[in-house]
Amino acid sequence: MISTRIVVVTGLSGSGKTTALRALEDQGYFCIDNLPSKFLRPVVKMAEDSGGEIRRVAFGVDIRSRDSLDSYPGIFKELEKDGADISVIFLDCSDEVLARRFKETRRPHPLADHSGDISMGIAEERTRLESLKDRADQVIDTTRLTVHDLSRLITEAVRGEDFKRHMGITVLSFGFKFGLPSEADLVFDVRFLPNPFFKEGLKRGTGEDAEVSSYALGNPTGAGFIMWIGRFMDFLLPCYEIEGRRSLTIAFGCTGGHHRSVAVAKTIADNLKDQGFIVALRHRDINK
Image (cartoon, rainbow, N blue to C red; front, side, top):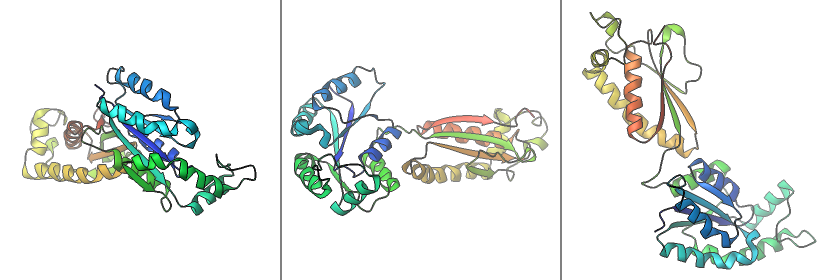
């Protein structure tokens, strides 16, 4: 039984298929462009036999497939009978914008005649792709979309409950007295939390110790901060993912980088890992 998720991106030449496939690749899809129809099932079988290494496959299908275009809808039906999860995304665009894009890139339309008449090529292509457009689960008009807009729409289209997060997050603790971390995208000052440095028996410990962490966070202020940071991340991180962000560094700073910032960074990192994010935890100044 097929369990691989399959996304087929098709549409008019110049409508943004390359951008769409790049967006899918960023979401962990194994992408193949312009694959002849006879190789579709063997590639899906290869994914099935990968032992879970390849769980998502995206195929780019366009007019270059020529005679095999009409065979794709039938192949999709066969794969669906075998249990495949197939989504077909068709990219459309106005004739005027398509013609302008080809003129700007100075690339010939694949169906243009010897005179280079782009309009004739676009009209013929629309006719040949009708069967695929009719089969499409979603049609996206890219006439007024930027590459960033299209990437966001593609990402939203394929996100599901089994979506695996691919944005890498570094959670960093640091001490303000040693300077701000230049690599940080977000910086939070946690010097308002109770300071274990002044608590008898905790000064020589670090935020990795349970007693130190409990002192800094086991109070209404600390618990409230962790709760609100969690809610903030619930809102913010999906926005970064949709934008196609591949990495993010979140820094928490206290005075010396030994106690409060370490405790907060560790707690936040553990919470993000539980949500499926790829997280690296680093304590910059813990040994200074």
